[in-house]
Image (cartoon, rainbow, N blue to C red; front, side):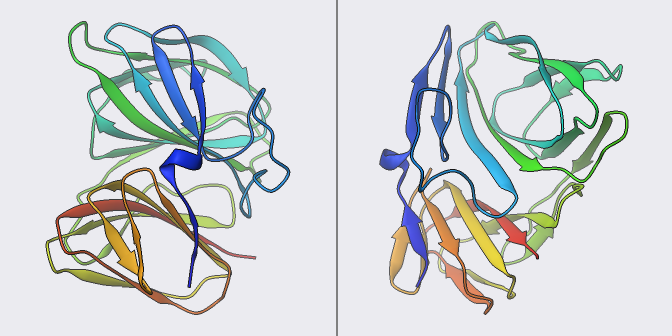
Length: 219
């Protein structure tokens, strides 16, 4: 049976036009039992008001993976990359020796919701950018953008009554992004996480349309 971290248990930060729900310790929020999960250091669900967001700030030695749930994210970074990221695109910025970037809601009218995840990185060179268009297929694990870490990120879409088998890994983490998903008698809703530490595979199922992000962690 997986460990469950409910959306209501995530740390909550309110900023200037931004609200963030953190899965792991961040800033004033500290819990020694919630430092990370394998190489994953952060899973943040960001709700950004129209026209607001994060100005230019710096990172190093991390993989930054972004998945938009609603709205349009405007991204700019010091590698020269700039543009809009929409639902269905997985973006990865390997900070390497150091990168500066900004992230803002591209719309003056519509809200933005995105998940941003950070992992310890094996990339020690200049920063590197990648993005992949992803079309989730009902009942399948669909690969997203590769990362410089012992980890793989998959997108999952389930129709009502559907299921998908996730193969074994050293660890696995499921973040439900819409609907509800069940596993071994546990039902998880939006913002809930299922965390698996056994190596065996497992099955996800849903009585309603649902989506999730699945991290398979190795080593």
